[in-house]
Length: 386
Figure 1 (spheres, rainbow, N blue to C red):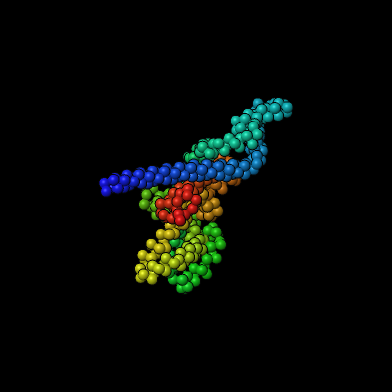
Figure 2: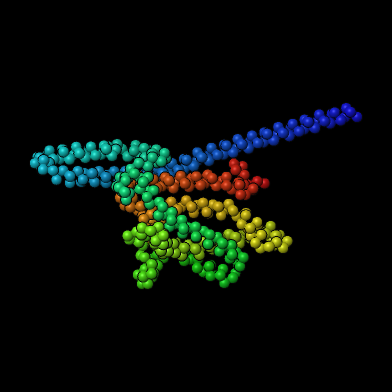
């Protein structure tokens, strides 16, 4: 009997050690798989960003055609400066031409235009990927700085205030309105939103023009545009009130342009999840509607909601070129329009590369966030858990 017991204990110890060894091996394999997936994901994102940034550099320089425009501008500036010099006017024609050509060559070398564009394009790419934004070629900040970083940081708060408010209002209003409509499918409100959804085909600036005509030109109750009144109020409270007053029209235009279609999209999305079998089972159990929505509808849709929210946040960086121009809002969008008009490549590339990095970082983090909020998702596992 003792022998049998001893054999049993030995076998049990062996089984426990085997199970522990298997568990350690599984954890190691999971860690290796996670690290491999993370590394490959980072490499893929960096390569994608590099390709996108290089295409932007190539397009922003018009394949090198901007160099010819800049050379012509340099020659014109050199000629204008030289003609104001009495010594230059006293030169012979050949001496004048040689003098201008020498000055143009010096300026071209200073800007690096003496080298082929294809070589400089890879230098631009290197600087962009390392966030060495450099100096603007044409634009300056309000303080007179030509550093691209200062120019962008000066305009960024204005865009974040306006479009941060507008996009967050749009996101949460549409989300909860869509959830409410999914409970009242076929109601008057549901049909009204469905009927108004095509109005989102018009961009925000289209509604902005009409809002300006009605509330600024005809009624005179709101300002035509700008960020604050002129001159800007010194008192912080008055400044905030002026800012809020100037935000009413652009925020309203933004909401009018997208609220109905976005609400309709969320409503349809929640309707799909509300028809799942597990939701019907919860209803059959007699669970409260609020609990059903939180646990059986909102919780499975968290990855989609988080994705939409994250992409909403990073799109704040780009602003809106035409909307900011219509409302004379001094933000990133208006800066981008000026940079394109002035062929200011460093500012254009800086806007694109920062947005590309934000997008890549968001896509990278979302995979891990999905795994945290949804147990069905396994990072690097090739798909949902079975």
